[in-house]
Image 1 (cartoon, rainbow, N blue to C red):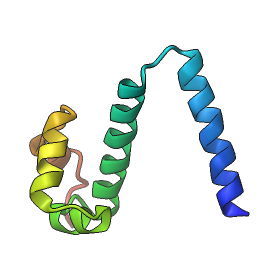
Image 2 (image 1 turned 120 degrees about the vertical axis):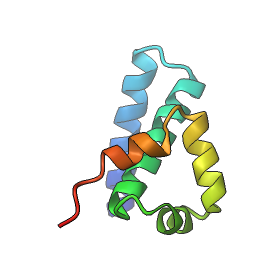
Image 3 (image 1 turned 90 degrees about the horizontal axis):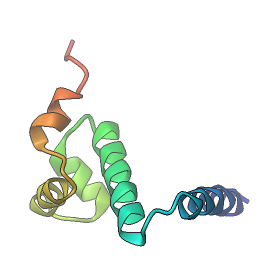
Length: 83
């Protein structure tokens, strides 16, 4: 049931992106940017844990951030202050 709901939501998003004229490359880059950012946020911006959950080496994650125009510095700047 959850898979059907996810597929339906994804189909709506894909249809919207196609209607807006995004290329496959633009859509892929935005998906990766959002997915990686969400992973980093859920792991409190810990690159090692996030990379492990994504199934990539931490250096691969850092390289991917760079290729998507995200920097480690900008990612750390978004982190909530420690208590």
